[in-house]
Amino acid sequence: MTKSATSLVRLDRAGIRKGTDWLVRGVDLSVEPGEIVTLIGPNGSGKSTTAKMALGIMKPSEGSAVRNRGLTVGYVPQKLSIDWTLPLSVRRFLRLTNPLTDAECDEALEKTGAKRLINAEMRSLSGGELQRVMLARAIARAPGLLVLDEPVQGVDYVGEIAIYDLISEIRSALGCGILMISHDLHVVMAAADQVICLNGHVCCRGTPSDVSQNVNYQALFGARAGTALAVYEHHHDHVHLPDGKVQHDDGSLCSDCLGEHHEHDHGSDGAEVQLEHQNAR
Ligand SMILES: Nc1ncnc2c1ncn2[C@@H]1O[C@H](COP(=O)(O)OP(=O)(O)OP(=O)(O)O)[C@@H](O)[C@H]1O
Image (cartoon, rainbow, N blue to C red; front, top):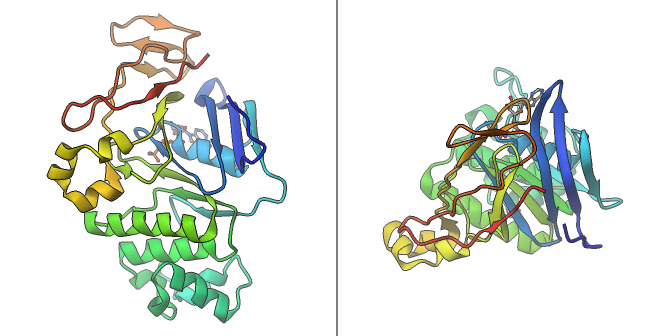
């Protein structure tokens, strides 16, 4: 892939193998300052694994994952390991891993529209409030890279738009790069500069703007939604077997193609979405 000296993080042909199984393979991606890259794909397609390679939590079995020297990273994981039966205020939660002052806690919560929650109990937060508090914790140290694993979990549709807008604002305010995961194939941010679809490998990548600007889509979801969200339907014409082989729709198997045969994608009105098909080799 094209390399940039400014990339915050860069994965080149990166893959993770556990035993004889490949969890994900052949991933090329980079995140530049101020760029939002969204990973989409079905359950188990390797989105979190890819994010963990970008974070340095998992080391690639093949290929490479390189972060800028001195890069600070904010991470909102998919799951929080918290004992919800214990009392834990938002303020204490923000300080669990960061020695933040009161002013820093206030500032971070202010940026995510959650300042009033500073003394609230974590277990009493709504889904949307929890995501805002998690975001506040991730941005408190002004990270250069923000990694968000499904930031709209437990948030209703209207709340999703608000959170996506907030993420765009955070990108603008901090100038950070954002690597974001959505397991929802139909809803991704229009603000994403790149969408990368995974299915055990990179199936395809491109901008969702063609869909979000489509008049039929805006008529369907409303003009407001059209500025924040895009429909991104996807058809996989092959599956990746645990042993690394690819099985095509016609049942044929191949051991060394990483998904060259890929269908075009279509928007909600059937209009073709411009996607750059990425041959895995
Ligand atoms: N540490 C691990 N050891 C073995 N297998 C793992 C490990 N972590 C993930 N996997 C497997 O790797 C595959 C990809 O998992 P991953 O969590 O990356 O998928 P995902 O696309 O994020 O899924 P979801 O949308 O369900 O969160 C899954 O089959 C999962 O069971």
